[in-house]
Image 1 (cartoon, each protein chain N blue to C red):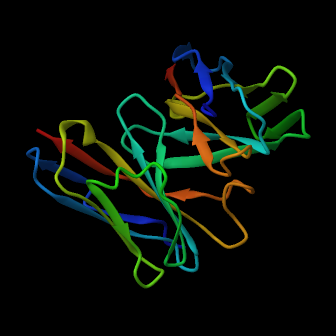
Image 2 (image 1 turned 135 degrees about the horizontal axis):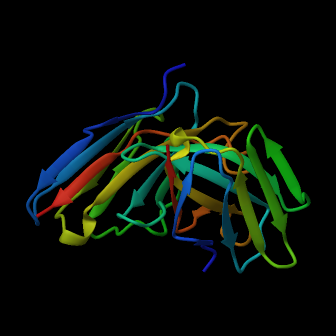
Length: 111
Length: 117
């Protein structure tokens, strides 16, 4: 299966702390993307990292990709209550040419 | 710029009944996707359209699900007859000719939540 597996499944932190979530996968990819989903809402694209990149930053987000280990991590620094949401990694490329979503990490940021 | 519009937001039906969901993508977006998201899981692609043609429907349960995009703009997803396991959120997404999964420019609607009793 091309689906990414995320861990932890759930994470609870205090405002101001950093949150790290991980995504592991099994197939080759062209890129890996992270999406956020607030409760009852659609998904919002956060950041994309290509297979030839190792690290990318966007505001308080930092994504790393290790293609040798087939894993990626998303770091949210200085978290805010508004960051409370589910975060999904999504894999693109390989044989399917489709965007395949992972299982998600539910992040709760306590004020 | 208006986002992806979906309706209805919520629908409750009995099993074996039928239901239809509507999606209007962002203006100018040639590619339209329907995803199914079961509670606690990530979205799963059901069908992808390029203009009014089907690019991928390999995971669409064709015995009960159908989708169309007749004029290459808005789209309808239908389930008939519905089963209990069809309870999920049905998400529509669209991308421009320059966008899509290769660039990360995939825009999602708010979804239609279906409950089958």
